[in-house]
Length: 107
Image (spheres, rainbow, N blue to C red):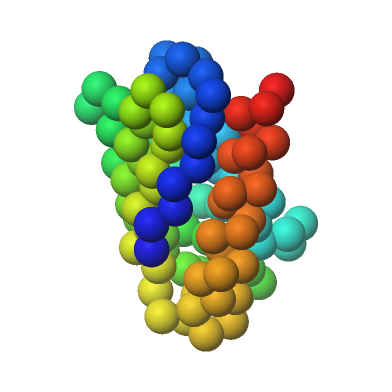
């Protein structure tokens, strides 16, 4: 799944926002009962590779992907297991990412 969000910041400001907010973003999409574990982030210039485990009760969901910051936007590519599409749906995940980063970039 790919999500692109305009940021209206400098590239450096956008990178700092993305770097400090990935865990909050994932937790925010799943609600208060979602726990984020084993978060790994690695930057190579404007590209961040990431992976994590999202835990909801006894269910653990591996999530990985990339975030690419360019001068005007952030593009996130997520590798979501089929379980996410079944129970949450791509549209809800996309909406949550767009909303959260829209809030973060407007500050």
